[in-house]
Image (cartoon, rainbow over all chains, first blue to last red; front, side, top):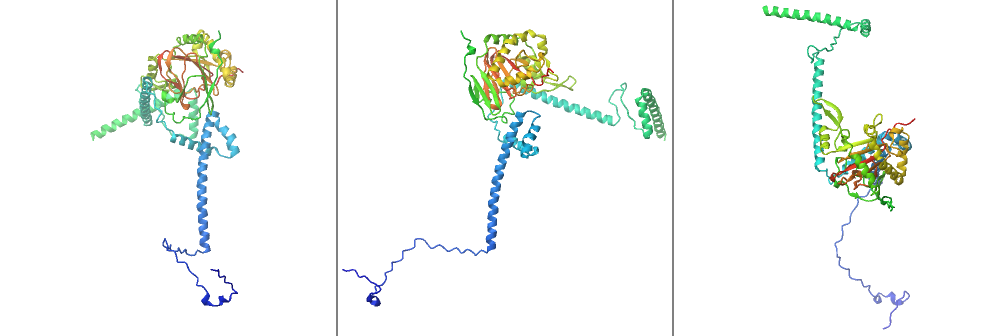
Length: 243
Length: 275
C-alpha cells in the first residue's frame, strides 16, 4: 500500500469527506484526588514589608543569641586564664599586672575581669565532681580529723562564752554597776555640765601632777553627797513608815 | 668500679594537663585513690604552669643517706606550729580558765603525733619576721655538719638537672648574710620530719619560684608523696631524689612498715639582704 501524503496544495484537502478525523487518546484515570487549590489572600505591599521586617528581626535575634553564647564562652575562658595568671604572678602582684597588661591595652576594667573570674570559679565548682575522690580513712587521718573537729567545737563554745561575758560586763558598765569586789578600784566618770572655759581649766589640771590629789578631793566630795543623800533617803523612808 | 649512682640516665617526660584543683579542694589527707598515676622511675613531670617535679631513682649514695638517717634519730621537735602538715588547723588554745590563748596546733592533735613518735628538726633559717637561725642549728651544729655531704649532693643534682630554678634560688640565697645560708648551696634551710604522715599542705614560707628537694631516709614501705592537684604520686625509696614545687598541695600516704624520715632542703622567702 502506498503512503498518502497530504499537502496543503493537495486538492483533496479541500473536501472534508476525505479528511481523516483526529483520533484522541482516552484520558488516563486519576490515581490521586485532585488537591484543593490554596487560595492565598492577596497581600499588600505594607504586609510584605511587615513580614520582611519580622523575618529580619528573628534572624538577627538568633544571631545575637549565638554571639552571646560565644561571648559567654569567651568570657569564661578569659576568666579561667586570668585565674591561672593570678596564681602565677603571685600574691599582691595581680592588680598592677592586670592594669598594665589588660586594662590599658584592651580596655577591660578590673571589675569586669573579676566578674569573669567569678564566673569561671563558679563554673569550675559546678562541674567539679569529687565523688570518686574519697577522704582518707586510715586510723591516723580519722583520729586527727576527729580531734580537730572537737577542738573547733570547743573553741567556738569558748568564744561564745567569752562574748557573752563581755557583753554582760559591758552592760554592767553601761548601767554604772561594778562587777569587781568592794576593795578593788574602778573608774567612775560623772558627767558634770561645765562651760568650755572651765573644761579647759579642768583639762589643764588633769594633765598636771596635782591630778591624784584633785581626783581624791572630787571623790571625797561625791561620797559626802552620797552620804547625805542616803541619810535623806532613810529619813524620808522612816517618815513614810510613821505615816 | 663505677658509681651506680652516676650511671647515664634517660629522663622520660610526663605532661599533665588536667587540673583537679577544684575537685581536690575539700580533701584533707592523701589517699591512694587521689593519685591516678604513681611514678616510680626517672621522670620529669610538666604541667601547664611549668615544671612540677623531677624524680631521680637511686641517685644518692647509701652512705650519705645513712648519715642523714642517724641525724634524724637526734631530732625531737614537736610539730605544734605545723598544723597543716599534721592535717589539722591552727586554732586558738583553750586555757585552763576557759579563755582562748595563742594560735597553734590543737593539743589533742599534737598528742596523737607524739604518741606516733612524729618528730621534726629544722636546721638553718626559720621563716619569720625577721628570719632567724633555728635553735637546733645553734645548739647542735655537729648534726648539721653531718648533713653537709647529702645537702651538697642534693645541690649538685639540682644544678645538673634544673639549672634555671637552681640559679634563681642560688641568687636569692647568695644575697643573704652567711648565717642564713647552708654553705655554697641554693638552700637556706633543711627540714627533717620523722614518721610524719602529713595532710595536704603547701609550703607557703618557701621562696616563690624555687623548688623543694626531698630525699627520703630509712627503710620503710608506703609513704608515697601525692600532689593532689595533678593527681600524681611518687613512690620514693631511700637513695631517691625528688625535686618538686612546694607551692603545689602535697602530702604523703601512711607509712605501712618501718621507719621513715625525710630530708627536705629549700629556700625560705624574705631572706635579709647583705647590704
